[in-house]
Image 1 (cartoon, rainbow, N blue to C red):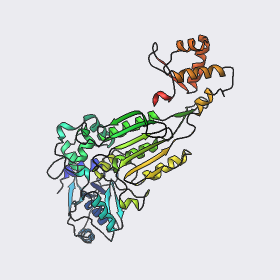
Image 2: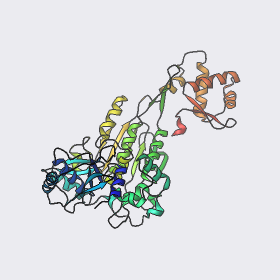
Image 3: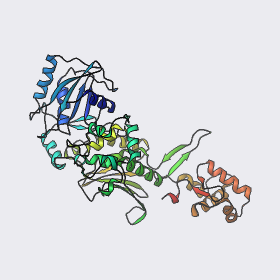
Length: 463
């Protein structure tokens, strides 16, 4: 039975994978059994009645008739499931608790429908064979829920990453960490941390989970022959996510449209937001039981491919692009609390929409074995620079512009003095040219004043 203090801590943490708020008892009481089944088919959890969506305790009165109605709808769940139902007084307001265990006879069904908790929501599954296949594929237990006996909460947490989580999830830093992990369902009944805790909060978790990393590769050309950059990102999962996004951005080219004195418009080869969706999907849905499989990000001259081990679960394949189910629901729930994950099931439609709005082909999905998404690049990403290199810019400086750009392209980091010597132009002319090219967003100066140099914006030195 929860105490008033524990309920206050749950309320501070907000709704999530293991807790759901109800302002009052729903008019359709069956909604309660739907939520109960969702929790029972996952790791269990609490339904708190008398708490609104703004994490405010407002209290509620439930008489004997309403309590009987709750018990009756729960009794219709098959197989039978025992839940505790009790009121707790908190500062003069009554919160009713439905304490749902993680069921031992999964899957549980109510009204002929199966629900599974996904983040802060319940997903509906209509066919028992689908859910049985789902649990069979996950070996009856989610990888992120397995006890991680080597992980020491007091010694192995990466402090900066943990603080970032607390701030983004808007959680009170006064909560004892053991109590916080209990409320997040990151501890077993024996108090042992689960794999999700180590992967999400641990310092260098790849020491024990060598496959739980993101490997990023830049290839020259259109095939896997010539690698020109190879980075592997480990660390806590959110840090992996940020590092992978930053790496991808450094490998893409961007055009700038400058109109008047306003801010310049950036036109990327591929919209950056599609990578936020695809990398997050890969982290939450990868099959961590595949010891040799890592998330792969591959950048080619014409496309970007992101893949992760584990094809679609049967229940998701039937409604691809509309239904989502994570292989790592605890990890998914933590990202949900940080408000990094959008609405469940919205990732695929959002990626399609972003590519369409950018005038690019829809992403291609390959679900055989590995789940791979391919994004095609914008064909004219280099047109602004190419136009000048080809001498299409009108004006008396046309030839000099072309000459200077060619020198910067062939020798990234070239200084102004070197440009003067190589082009045989005056100091005044070179100053005027580099100023114009800089204002047009085609080149930039990097480094200290005395020993820096000029580079093409998003030129070859980025690749």
